[in-house]
Length: 195
Length: 277
Image 1 (tube, rainbow over the protein chains, first blue to last red):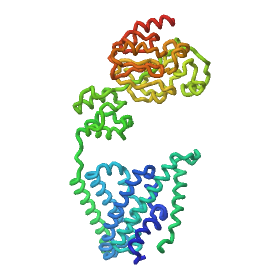
Image 2 (image 1 turned 45 degrees about the vertical axis):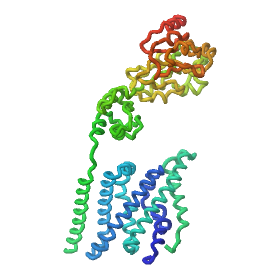
Image 3 (image 1 turned 90 degrees about the vertical axis):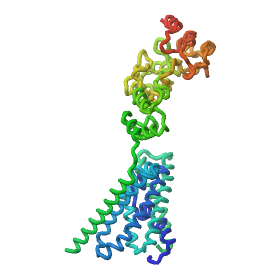
Image 4 (image 1 turned 30 degrees about the vertical axis):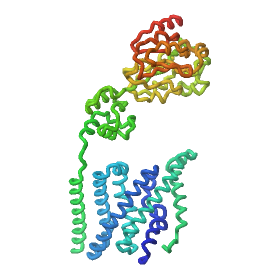
């Protein structure tokens, strides 16, 4: 895994180890924000951005600060701290410089703080023994994978809106069924590139 | 011991550092607040009902402050809020219009006849499902008060089998418009001088048999109007609110008295009333 090419890492994050559909991380925004294509894309872009940023911040801190001090067990709490601060920073910056994006993201930007997909990607980067560049590429791939899942599922949900659904399954139940079916389709990528 | 201290120290340092960065960032990148929008928002009712077409009072206030939204879109606020917001924005009061609901039917029990006796759920929607309700006219007010039930301001009353809107109480929320299964209620701008109290598209003869105050599409009003403000389409007269000056010529000449010009007493109408009595 250590020697995996950057392209393989990217595809791995995008398809094989798709965060939402194969690893079941970040399910909350996956179900919450996938009602409309627009907000799904906006949320995904925010997630990609935060994932790459937080990987860029946490990898050096872990390798250069925690490991030399023999404090690897602080990984989780430090990463949460860094991600939270980073998301806040991004929020402030967006509000100042890109108000339309800030408005369209709304409540979901602060929610990314506690998005397990972001924490997941930073910790998995460390666990997989990736270098800095590999980690960034993996974070980007994971973010793209999140976007792929969101956009695909937004399409599915828009179709669900007009479908005739039995009364008892309307709303969230049918959404969960649809989500599991989409997830099953991603099983097909298992074993690709030997990842 | 040193290990614990080191762990605590690093965590504290990281926390302090990120806190510091955030504090500086929020000071440096503070968003300048729009004072005009804030004052406008204070005037708005704060119900966040969305009737204006924006996601809430805040969004509407901002849109008004930017000049992208019109004044007077706030229906719960009505004329009061429209006046205040236009004052804040330095606009003329003619820049907005407050809408009032109006029932396009004058066929109360005295004027129309029954084609059947509906006995069932006491609602217009239900009665309408059953051969279009009691009355001989298929377009008229059913009088079970779905609109009155929908009105939150008590502006609609049912009198003699006909819904009537008290214009002074109406806030223009348009809830009654969607409640009426016959689509009888229209929103007329506050500047409207008059309306046709009928919505029957039937031919004159059929209307005559069904209702004594229904528009028969005789075109008399069109001929007497000097302002090109009233037109007959599909056997039904309609007043153009922009052109009508409220002279009352159409109402005076209407053979059935279905035109109401506000504040204008029609001689013809009295005649019809007498005939019926």
